[in-house]
Length: 124
Image: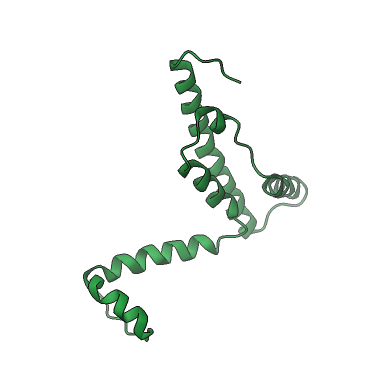
């Protein structure tokens, strides 16, 4: 089912969108995903990891990847708060996001270890 939505945009944006009319729904969907990701609760760590991995680091660089001091402090705070009094629903979402990132990093590190093993290199 399709819906029609009408809204005002600047003339400049209208000109830029004109050649992309058939893909407006896709553009809005992608933009909405990015918008929602940016407003996530204190979750800059995800973009940091993605930017690092997008730089095509070496296996050694992946293995040596560690969270920033700021993120590590936040994780420790959440762990302690959960132990003492429990987390708010927002903090639970944040915690789940950190767990997801840790999962992705563990996969990347495991693959980096395999690459080094297959090349016959020693692993740190």
